[in-house]
Image (cartoon, rainbow, N blue to C red):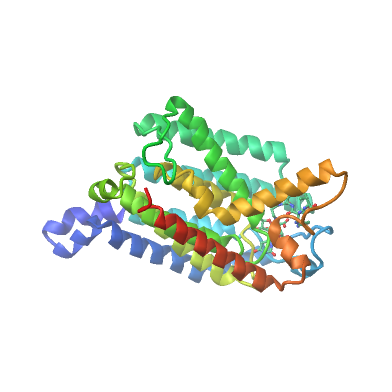
Length: 359
Ligand code: 57M
């Protein structure tokens, strides 16, 4: 909105010329999202507490989690609010990608909100049925895929990291591929959100990485120099990634150990889905496996655990899945698990950024 209101005035007030620069709007959009979370956080936590929106803890979880019962949850509502306000304020609303990411974060936030709300009504750590939640996620992801495919004359080739000459064109099949990326990432972040700050940390790290990807992908000369796909208009996603970083840091201020608030499914499903959407728009979909490698590790730990359990009639690979619980049960203090997982996430992000030159 500010872009549309103030940039046209740059002929009379030359300072407003800065609003044309993506870097300027990214920095101030990020700061806007951060300060919305930082200053509204205490009020939101107070409201969630008053409304008794507190976390129910499964009995079969790690012993150390029982003290967390009652921690306010659904803090993801604050994240989504700050992201939406900052997006409307700082992004170019004539750019279709702005509306795609808004559709996804609000739509998945709504799915998560229903899940959290039902969990609180059902008075246990379960919400929507797995099938119901999955169906809603797929439906919304397909809408996003359709929108990207039909409205934006989108390049339907899939970028394969490291192989610049291999990019299969999926045609309309890209819609299903895009939906797969969005749904998978949404559930991966959801699974990872099981320790204080464990999900929001890598979300921030992945968002910084895709801020770099979006900037170069939306830059004609830079994308040509780096031999990556140029996606006209995707530069705006740089600003959105900056907003995710700001909102994530603002939420982490309260979610860091010992957490004053959990994000809930309303936050984890929304953040995961919108990261998947960013990966699709910047045409760095497969790269997300590396950048979001921590989320991949968490999902694979569950898949291997469940599979091994079934094949061996009850034996387990890990003490408990997802992976973060395994290390908890090994005796690692919670903060140690969290920070070490963040370190792994940063290392993966640096490797992913390095691939921009390795083509
Ligand atoms: C999402 N939810 C956290 C919080 C957060 C198939 C199976 C792997 C599913 C999985 C599951 O239920 N996943 C649901 C993870 C929960 O966090 C809430 O959920 C939101 C995110 N969706 O925002 O509202 C608990 O996580 C802890 N937490 C924190 N700090 C945070 O900042 O401490 C969350 C955020 C919270 C709190 O304790 O209550 C969760 O873990 O449920 N199931 C599991 O992850 C369970 N694993 C399991 O059953 N493993 C089995 C098989 C199925 C693989 C095995 O290993 O044999 C574990 N989780 C729990 N209990 N709670 C272990 C059992």
